[in-house]
Image 1 (cartoon, helix red, strand yellow):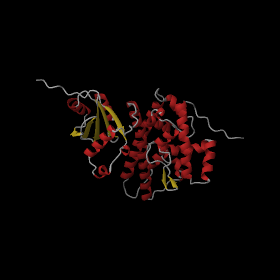
Image 2: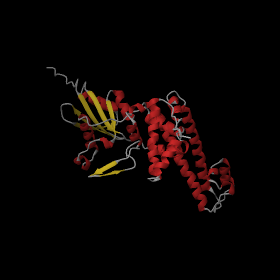
Image 3: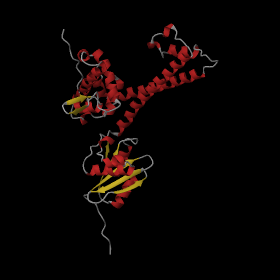
Image 4: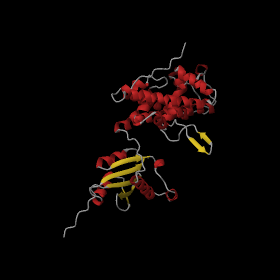
Length: 358
């Protein structure tokens, strides 16, 4: 007698995945039935084959926490036919037991139960091209940070050896010019007979400078592509927003329409003050701990330039500074700057600076 084939057609099959480099801990929960767990290789195809065998014809819905794998796991799952949601770890409801008994298996079960209960909201998933473009912008920032570090090491080494700067290099603006590099390479003498340490550092500075120039060139070329040019040109009408900030915004935000209003956009940037209430007392913090770690500090830094180039925002900054610390005042301006950025991108119109009266 032939056995009836089991089918889960019309049923959602929920899958929680705790993603690691060497293995995945997987928890699976059908709409009706118990949670099953297993460990497997980090392979979307292997998971799909397991689901087809054990939950044939089901509507596969998966979730994992954002982490080291970025969005590669998301796209791999989607390509084999498993719908996927990527969430922030802080957004997963956690019981006291799960906090104490934290293991990969517990994490997978926690994910699948939250997904099945409809308690999760997925992160925005950028298109593949945005992911690579975003990496170029972030890598450039890393190179710039490394370059600054090596420049500081060179100066520290000079100070340790009692080397004084000639009069022509007394101003910081002259440092790291071609003339300055030539002086370092040809004229500087250390206390010892050799100067191998200085030569190694100078060589690294030169390599990083070349790499930074190449990354900047790629960024400029990227800004003129069809994907970015129109939005790039609009953002550049805002005082204080240069090409680096512009391309950082465009590659991190991707589509501004995913934000319903200015507050959502500012929260994404990490520029919404936190507040804690207790009884009749409310304490306001500086910024949200969540938000894009790439953009938030960058917008605040840009705000310092903006107040020197936009009369209206400059006047507001000085008003704020009358009743609060300068750093707190500039965060307020950064919030206004985020509103301007949101408006320019959403309405696709150039920024018109505030005109002061005569």
